[in-house]
Image (spheres, rainbow, N blue to C red):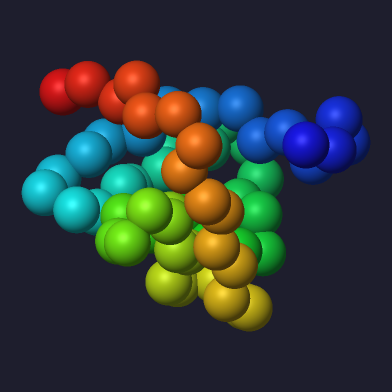
Length: 60
């Protein structure tokens, strides 16, 4: 993780989709991502980005 690229905010989980609500700016990867096959994949940004899930502690 890069210290300069921290975007503070909250999220909402609906089914397999994460909706990020950022406090300030929205990263170029976007604010909406799907959880699929062990990855979080951003789907509405200016470029695609995926992050592998190593430890899952997300709870509804």
